[in-house]
Length: 169
Image 1 (cartoon, rainbow, N blue to C red):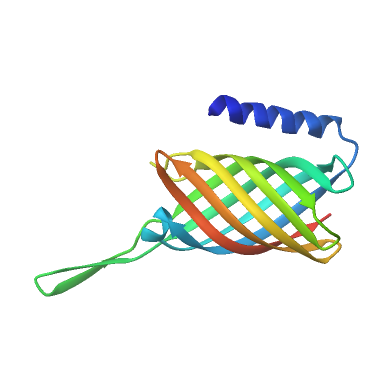
Image 2: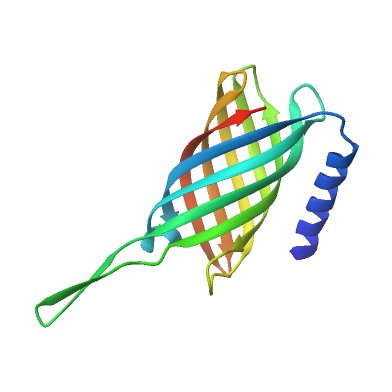
């Protein structure tokens, strides 16, 4: 798996070095944890930057760097008539990925990020990162997007269904 991710990174950065012109994007998103992540997290937010190079009029490829924060869900335990609420831990990841975007029309974009999410917090494992997205261009440089971000770690999956947007330079 690590060799595959290294190969993806090498191809992405090789294209980056050979390309003449690209688009720099900065964005933010919010979302609801789903699957395994919904048991321990109540909300998620994040940010991303990516730099994409046009390989054709409709297709772009580049590198993406993100931050994804899962907010811990409070747990209440009751014993002997006494309730105790324990604040759940928050977990953060730093995804590093290859990013691809395809302009379906002047307004709609389909895309995907594939890479590796680095666990930031102590004891948090890193894993395979994937993020399909659908975007709608509100203006030439502002795009709203719906995403599904997933991080696979040892048979479990931390995932988020999210909404966000990004600004293109």
